[in-house]
Image (tube, rainbow, N blue to C red; front, top):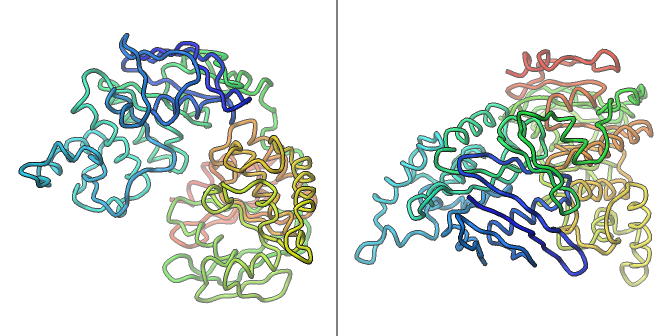
Length: 500
């Protein structure tokens, strides 16, 4: 058992944790939920050994649990599977599993690779992976790498007495439903060997996999409950402090798009990625694109931003034929792209909000001798107010913001750049339910103002709820075009039958 009592963590005058009390029992899954900024990540990092608490106590099986590094946490049977995977792709699967544990396999000064691979096979079987442990981690799919991360955590059992505690930080954020099902199946099977702390913004998943749920708000624990006695609406109310909006996707605010076509594709193809795509996006329209991983939809939208070069076909912007050789040309023609990996592709995390907002259009703040920082600050303050970005100020670093507020900064960047066509690739990934509602409201507002939006959403429900029309793709081709007007939305089944 692990017991947390009165845990506090402060960063200067900011109190990230305020007297947190929590118990983790053997063989259970504890769901950890709360809005961005509630303190979940700080609590997880303290348990994983990457941060130290300011006050409070943690005990493990009655003994003090005081760790200053992930290695020390591992030695006490606590491991974390991070949202951003930590595998080294140029090393073998076995090398990744036993990274830092190589001494176990050294004999006469040499690593016994056969013994290491045999041990890796045993742990891989526990998570349902049957592949050559000597193969490179980079050859695996994202979902398979997630399972290797889990196997790596389980390898601690070889050198730690007692049950393990495995911290799962948003493990399902980029997995397909079939992959999530496999992950949950393995977690349930492993409860005899380990306890789990499961962090996710997807409340339905938390309810499905958890035995108990711990709700955090403003750095404090506000509720602990049995997962069987609660529903998603209850969790939402406790987390956010208000009832879930009866129109979560604001369908009543869905207005009719213009007849003016903003972006059009005719017989657009990219060898090996997508074929003969016909698409017309109107001003004021939200066009959802549905499909599984490998359907070609990601490659298609990246072509609209100049990342991928079509091998044939035509593309038109406002009726004029164009060829987008790179993202710079796309930006110049009024296209903005909010990527699924906002931390890697959407923002410069170590730069302030003000600099990120003007990054795509430095000319709007340039003066005779360089950037005029007072103009940059004023512009950022204007967007902070318009988009309700929660931040201490325009000079705060983006890495200090919650996921929802980071996403708003990315959006502000493209609105500053004058983009009228917005490509939204998983805009609510890693964003809590309260921030999702705010993003949905912004999308409706932009649609009313005539912005043309292409959407790849996290879920089919989100795609259906937000879109005016839906394009379904499979194996690089469009298999269906489905209208989604207010009051006559298609079902998920209708989409799935064209996806698989």
